[in-house]
Length: 311
Image (cartoon, rainbow, N blue to C red):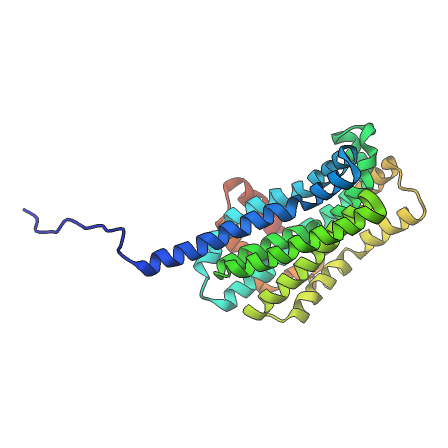
């Protein structure tokens, strides 16, 4: 007969554990509430100042803009959490993964934003119909910041992984204030276009300030972080110059944009992958890509494996 004792349980086992859980949980909940307010401030202001008709136009532009970042963000959250949890106390590896995450964002979402910007009229016509062409310009302004929106999701994930939930609350509060201020000023003087520009500006500033905070905690310099972004834009500069040239010459017809996208822009997207001096070819990034592939769902794993085979 076994002499093993029946395990005992008590809800009063560890006050420190409950205190830590309460501290983290309350910070996480507060961050969620403030984030909800920040993400809806623009809608409240536009609806109040310009009315429901303008709000309908803006909300559709924002939904189309947010969709790619939300899609990649949900995948990133599922993949990244086990990786961050396993490296929580290793600053060097956390830094390497943070740089990899931003490299991947620039590699994938920057060209997507350029293609959507260039083909905005075609995208709106297909998804919403020709009666919604007023959505085109605010959508183009917002979609410029596509990689920045995803970058803020990366920043939030790292703040949580480092246990800095109340730092996240602080930055979310600052972001909410900026959203309300810039959006109100933009709406007041420039209508929906001003609102979209205000939202873009708030996201850019928030991305920069949180990245600067994370830089102080992790093992990389902010100069290197800026250099990384500059390198990405240089890699895609032929595409950027083509788009700017077409817009300046006012040849931005949706059929012309589609033809140029298929014949020129898509082939040019191979440049960062073929360029061995590309920002993505650092050995640490390749190693991190292998870890991400191993932690990904099967569908994502197949896509990432194809990307890895190109590198």
